[in-house]
Amino acid sequence: MERAEDGVAALRQRASDFAPGDTDLSWTRITGWRAALASALDGQHDTPTSSTVYGDDADPSALLLAGWLSARLGFYVPVTKAGEGEIDKVTIGFADGAKFSADADGGKLILQRQGQQDSIAPFPERSLGELLAEELRRLDDDEIYAQALGAVTDLRGLADRPSNRVHIWKDPALADDAASPAS
Image (cartoon, rainbow, N blue to C red; front, side, top):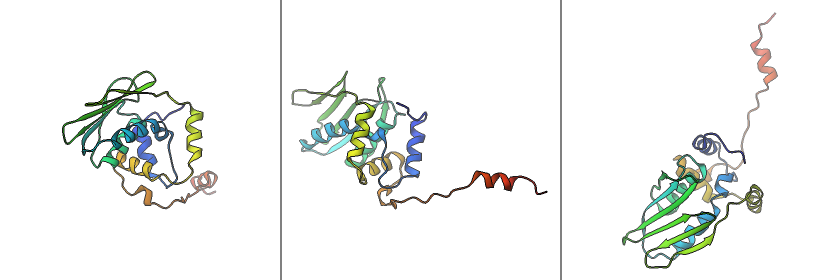
């Protein structure tokens, strides 16, 4: 699967050109992470106060996961370089001192919460076809993606932009005529 050479620059370009309805397969790749973390946080009664995404700090998926957490939790969540995967682990700390972690480990996700038994769930890497099928099931504007992308790139209000684009066509043939000297 072809990916941008510079994932950070690609996200910045995506944000600068963003229009509601845009998406990115880097976003779709983290659906499982988002679902697992949202489910785990749903049972927490205390306020999250810290979080870190561990993985490749130049990977768009890791950055978008951190952006999603930042937008949802209301504070900056960094990506810390660790391991070899896009995303290896996510930790969340709470006001009462409790901690929670989700670790990707060889096709499974291990959720660890203080005072509870570890939870292990299947967590396979999805194929390009599965990612595209997920995207095609949802063709409306994805405000949550816009918020995550905005948090990563520090550009707010992406979902409020107009959903249509205006493209200015510059005919290369006319540019060549203008550059040649008049006879």
